[in-house]
Image (tube, rainbow, N blue to C red):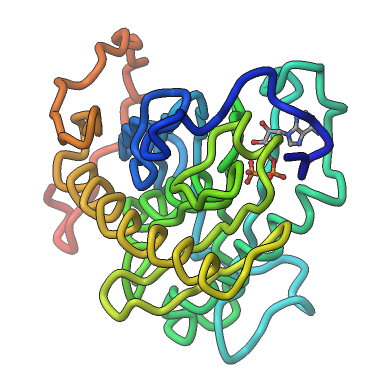
Length: 280
Ligand code: ADP
């Protein structure tokens, strides 16, 4: 079975037809952990570990668009930028934007434009940055999931949080949340972003070949998995400074990781404000 041009050295679906070589069931997600509010200087941020994927998201805005001729007087523009670090993959990736990252940035911008209440912030931009620190398939979905938490952390009003996940077909079997080997050696990949409240699909892509029934099965796996991921997103925001982890389909809470105290410089003494009568 060759889709991505490579052939796996071992069977990806076990002989029982119900489990995968990494031990997961056909409809099982990889372990996921989401942490909200990880960056001090961004308006909102989130960090997601998803299997071997590690993705950081930061949000700035809404802030005024410069240059001004790019402003939209009717609504905010949402500009997402997806970037994969050179060290995120096995072979060093050439740094900077390429066709793939531009395509992913565009589809994520479009997905968020339809979920953020953009009419409330005319002439502004909401900038969403996703940095993939380690990649192992499903990074656009991990990026979108992280960015959605970062947008909520920034207080940007949205219709809903957006979970995303990619199911696909491996050795003739539809499976949920492809890992790198399944993505590279499988026959199809279907990333989706879903609005949990309405079940709307904000993003649907397909790479490879599936029958109608297989596509419906992949979308159903994505829909169900999105509800689980959405719970993690909400829980991460609720416990902003805790880490919520999915391990063997069970949600766990860990205390926040210790961050070293940065010595604060004392602010310069301000002159005392004078009241109208000259008093303090
Ligand atoms: P996604 O990460 O959303 O699944 P793709 O299907 O395009 O996106 O990529 C699958 C995986 O292939 C990535 O997660 C990454 O591990 C790997 N990959 C993608 N682009 C490159 C690249 N330029 N160099 C090395 N590996 C890459």
